Image: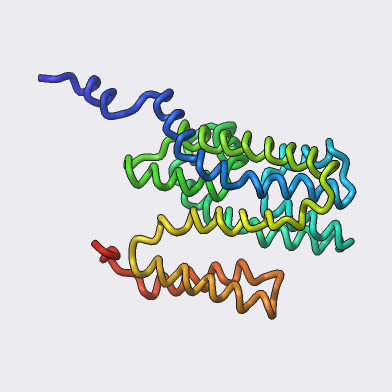
Amino acid sequence: MPNSTAIAREETPSDFKTMYQAIVDIFPLSLAVVPWGILCGSLAITVGLTPLQAQLMSLLIFAGAAQLAALTMMGAVGSLSSMFSSTFVISSRHLLYSAVFREHVRKSSLGLRCSIAFFLTDEMFAVTCAYMAKHKRFSPVYALSSGITFYVFWNIATFTGIVAGQHIPNLEHLGLEFAIAATFIAIVIPTIKNRSTLISVISSGISAIVLSIFIKEYALIAATFIGMFCGYLTKEKSVINE
């Protein structure tokens, strides 16, 4: 009769294999975000930050959408309160991400929880959830490996933008911001597997567009709740094309 411990070891991949899988899974999204990082770095130089300040923004804050929003408001000489409120609303989606991971990490050490919280991005959340759905378990090694890989790519892209921003004029007008939309589309589309999710995506997308006309600062968070509510009302077990 086979030893149960040996079977468990066979079913559970080694940390090295888990790290490798995380790097492979996050790699496409890491490449997709490079134009976004370049834009962020170049815009930081354009609004008057020093190269060191611009790089530290990515090293310490590590929040692409919030960084771009803050930099845009700096360029427009917006108030500090408006900058904080805007970045808070944009980053509020991470409250939902952390709620998903909470039960899996609440018994872990403070250091591990803080590390996962720092590296938690839309991309890391997406690939980690896909891993959980496939393997029916949460892996801190996988989450951190994917998050750190993305962090490295983001900072390299930011550095590239900082250097380019000092030598290539009007780099921010080359349409690099399209990478933001492309990245989120790449994250969302694979998760649409049932009708309620599809309705949630469509309703939140339409709501974000409409509400941005009237309440620009709060359109994102309002659209998020509208999408969740619509998804909840239409929740079903059947899977599209199943």
